Length: 223
Image (cartoon, rainbow, N blue to C red; front, side, top):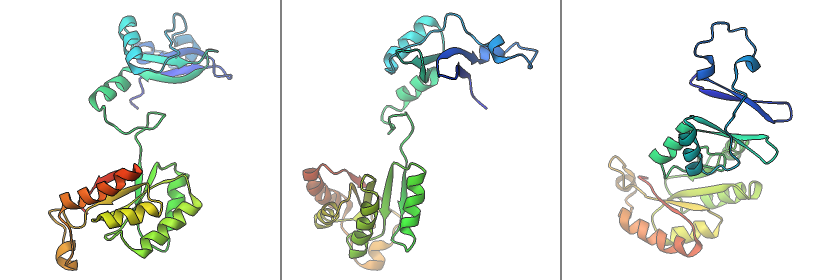
């Protein structure tokens, strides 16, 4: 299943070998034990997880996989050639400390919103987006307070808004980020139906002028 190599460790997590496609490519007896086919001698490892240094080691040793071990020789990670090319191809990808893409999930102003937030937190979501057509409202404020009361460390982005006043309102009530845009999208009918709206550049400028003071990020959204 597109797995090109698996480190092999002892029960105490000490690295004892690595199995790669190269070890298995010409194997005819698939009943042999792993320790009979894995690479055990001359293992190339590193204590440093810096990708540029890892790339140099991979190139110098003509290998594609580099186990990362701690000072005691225990496995803490694995850097592959693909990891490096992904970083080079997508340098601005938003990733967590484990190298995983960060994930935010949207919830609405619904009776079951707290159940939804709990389910997302249980799955280790990175952020929740409190998403509604008009974010400058009492219902949004109350829901934001509920979420923050139970999950004070959870990043909560709130929107959508279109004014500096709305940004001040949400940030002062605990928003970790604001989403700007009411009806600017090409297929949106919000402005036509509601009879309200702010040109998107003006809306972004107004919200950003407030958010900048608090160090709060602004997301421009179709809305």
